[in-house]
Image (cartoon, rainbow over all chains, first blue to last red):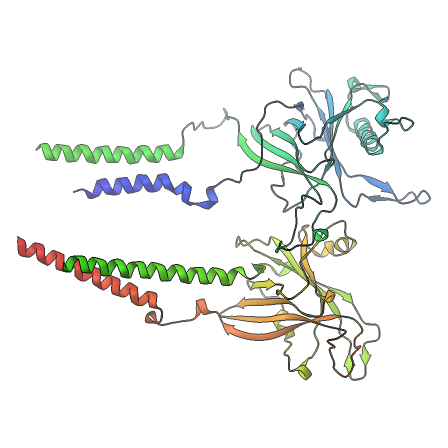
Length: 290
Length: 251
């Protein structure tokens, strides 16, 4: 009568080892450094407070026709409302430049592309990678064409933000006439390749999405063809720098409005197994005593 | 003594069985690995065929200048039933090569669902897979014909003369093998017209149609593994019987 014990033990062991032998259950891990220290954090209260901007350029001065940026380096503009205050007005402006939607890129995020009104966003840039926030005011030398510090790219991004702020944000607290009274925090993500920053999005349904901003380029390609060795570098893609918003981790805050399950499924199985074993053992001991 | 010998025999048989089966699986893996990729076509809309050169003066003597195409095929390379990667070949066309004793079967290249393709660039070829994606004007041109906005890995077969891409197509119980051979200066399509058709053309050549070995019906004792497993089962059974018999005798 030793078989029930053996069966129970086999069951317990097989349940315990199942997650380790099944490859599909192994999560994909990225290089995310989990942090709660966000350089800028806030709530996007309206869909129009998160803007995807694809740059357009004039083809010539006569017909005034425009073309889309062939590299599609988009600027994401966030008008963030401070979590601490009680109003729903945007208090800070964050612009992230150089992000494109590249399907099939490693860990490319679809969540990033979808608007999530009411979601809480957090952003930081990685100082180790050499990326820094550029705080731009209307009179900053970086957007003043007569200044030696003038940067045309940043100036373009600032003008875009200004345009969108006027168009979409009906908030008198952000403006003094037509001038912004808060700085625009610009992250130009294309200067370095690798992980250049992090982002977090907490949706209204308490889903937490953690991700990276990773810049790819000639020295860090995304697509290299089915055979890599030897592979001519000029055929890699991309041959320009481009940032991909990746989501590395998706989890959830405890949801109080739904059924709360605060135990692991595997522990339930193990408990059943152990109970069966104890039950069999007791039965066996009793029989021996008799 | 007898018990030890039987145990030793069973051990030897089992180990040889495992050894042989591992060897077989290794051999299979090696055969699979030589291809650059293997994929299955899942949907009819996953393909695109574009004309890249349409001759303006098609007739030269008794011959017609062939049209040159670019083929893009969407493959499921990870067996999840969904198309995931586009692969293509540039500079392909059909031309009758009976005078070279070469067989060109255009019918083979009609798209069939659930056909498993394997492609590789042979070692002697100077070509390599190239990535076609934006901002290339060519990609912008063909993008509207592609179902998914993802890059295309392709081989430009017009870049070098000779055998540049080998294929294998598994369909039903058989597989078809062949290659794309580029004809041009130095290797003309028609020997008596060395400059014809004045551009390079890659022709899909048919080599053979063979039964897929894994799907071939074979007798159980054809493989040594089957024979060994039967022997192991018989010896285990007899060993058990003898053990039981001994116990019965003792009691």
